[in-house]
Length: 397
Ligand SMILES: C[S@@+](CC[C@H](N)C(=O)[O-])C[C@H]1O[C@@H](n2cnc3c(N)ncnc32)[C@H](O)[C@@H]1O
Image (tube, rainbow, N blue to C red; front, side, top):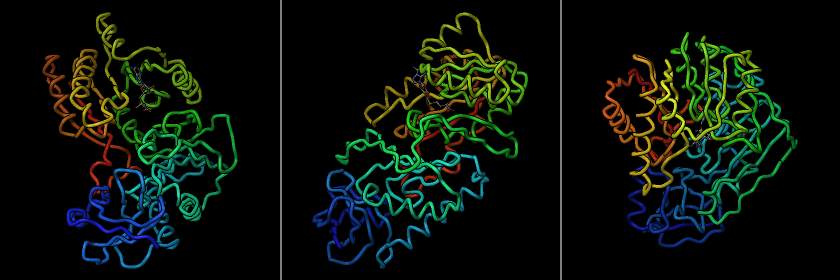
């Protein structure tokens, strides 16, 4: 069994609740990459158990603060708790999709697992999750009690470089190449919905599961409205709006593949007649449409992360301000803007400031009436605020 001894500062950080200990706060470590280690205070007292990384700035990711060594029974208990949480939201229907494990928040540092119908897609982000992948997956599948035909390891995030890990995309079981269909079950306020997912080629693990609830809420403002779904990806904000009675939908994205998927999804849901697509840089296209006099009752702007690091935040905030100014300009009087940011480096307050700036620039009194985050299958660990990333404002203006 390996061990890691903290500095005094590392010990204080750990006792303050944060689950990550930086390399500077570890005075000595003896362990293999990714191994479970016992964490020791400077005086040798035991503080708990963590996964060790030999390369990352994050040297230790806490797994447990209990005296006993974590083993398969702990992973099984955590997997059962994670599955029960998703079941409570009705997300385990036979052909449905959800995020089953979300890293530290579910007690599996570095590992994300999404389920799409009978397939699992996992992403491992650190040495510890690579090393424990198979044991954790076994615990999850046992807890899930639903037969999974396919399992794809899609560990292709660039953040793996911080751990000196190669990117990896490999089928662990049941290789398939055709897109699969997800059937979102009917839930209060949201009719059933069908969409396709390409597990190996789609964004993230194939789809943006985190916006599920925000799409359903946005659809409340769609009845009779012209809807602009900017940065639409596979069109699900727009399709939810169409199902709720929108008169027409325009999906804008720079990815032709995403737009083709959006059109096929519209077809699947019987709303193809209402949905058009435009392949464009949305920043430019929104301005052109404003100048052409187009106006919409519901506008959604859900861009990719503008800030990949704290250093990029200032520029990102200018970008959010300008984008939202353009979006507000396209809104009919008393229309609804749904504005999202998935930059985890941008804090909620900073994003609100950018929205305030946009409202000032555009001369529209913007009233935020709901401010949410990711769907509940993407929990945030209270002692790890860095894991909060998605912000979604619903604005009447
Ligand atoms: C966060 S995702 C959108 C998710 C989508 N709204 C949903 O509900 O699933 C961002 C999308 O923006 C697209 N994109 C990135 N930069 C763009 C740009 N400059 N103009 C238009 N689309 C862009 C990407 O192709 C991607 O589909």
